[in-house]
Figure 1 (spheres, rainbow, N blue to C red):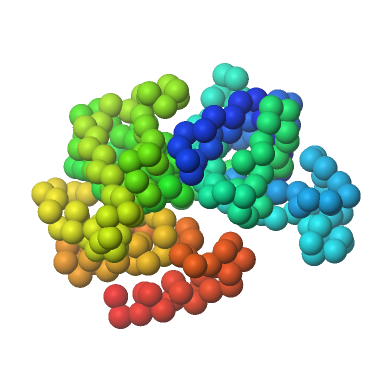
Figure 2 (figure 1 turned 120 degrees about the vertical axis):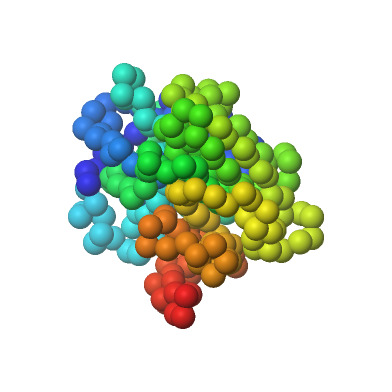
Amino acid sequence: MSEQYGTVEAVERLSPSMIRVVFGGAGLAGFEPTDQTDQYVNALFVPDGAPYSVPFDPDEVRSLEPEFRPKGRRYTIRAWDPETRRVTIDFVAHGDVGFAGRWAQRAQVGDRLQMVGPSGGYRPNTDADWYLMVGDESALPAIAASLDVVPPGRRCVVLAVVDDADHEIDLGIDAGIDTAGAGDVEVRWCHRVDGTPTEQRLVDEIARLDWSGNVDIFVHGEAAEVRAVRRFLVAERGVDRSGCSISPYWRRGKDDEGWREIKREWIADDLVGV
């Protein structure tokens, strides 16, 4: 992986909780994308009051007080334009909360963001008969990028979790990104506001699907929701989890630091006996 920085060229509010930021500039001259549709960068956010700015030497700033060291957060690349050398990232922002959320809320043309990467681990298997993609706002950029490369005419079911109808976003070409995907895509939006636990909603939706043929599975997002879906797929559909891309991005009730502290233990406990 390599270090570089992007300069903000455009900012767009996609929904009350999602902000699209397009980066360009000389700092991306050495950017080398992967072929993975869930490729991500580790974005390094400079805390307020820090005595340095982008670009900076990561080794030098490590000697500063903890509150001034850059805060790294992983973000999926929604799109990479090789002709203009622009990177598009869709940020989830819930008010003025968290380093990344605050930065995205305030982002203006000309701002800079340092990045490390990219890296990734998933791309839709072209040999699959159909695709199941499940996730919330944190996974929608990877899901949308994956839809871009689904083979023409291939069935794809997306179960997307958001707060309500106002938080639904366009996952295809109408989002302003030129895509080549032409799969037979069905998006089912699961709203959190209807009173039914989202975990159960997702499991119920999957249980109603026509389950035939070889399916390629991508499930990412909130930890409890990912666990419920994975356990149903393994127990009720006989899915081999080693052949799927299933992993939690965050945990409800935990901030980024809190989730990082328990993530390894959570995943280990979750896999026991399954």
